[in-house]
Image 1: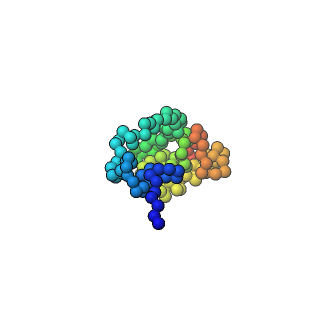
Image 2 (image 1 turned 45 degrees about the horizontal axis):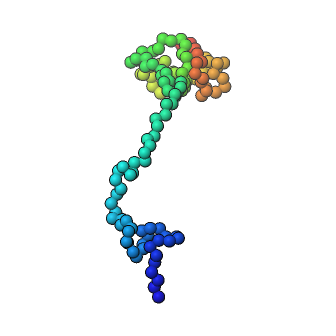
Image 3 (image 1 turned 30 degrees about the vertical axis):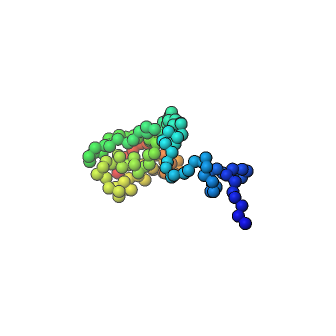
Length: 132
């Protein structure tokens, strides 16, 4: 025998399949107005101070085909011996020329750089090796 389902009561959610729709809102599939969907808050833009990492200096372009006449080079954040030698030799230098020259720079500055040519610290002043 089939029992009628009460419209409300413990454990019942209004509009969840009750046989009676008297007084209940009918879901037509229409979306709620935009004013009801607005969360009422906006994300706040944080005032972040990036500090010294924001505007790192870059190695200047020495110009087309010219050698940089500097006898010393100050290491900037992110510099490698490869980058420094490439800037020193100019944009016309090949990878082979750079590969042959950077070990000379390392030997000339080994006491300052230390045992690893991969570790350069910003602020170190490297001396260009004597011409070969």
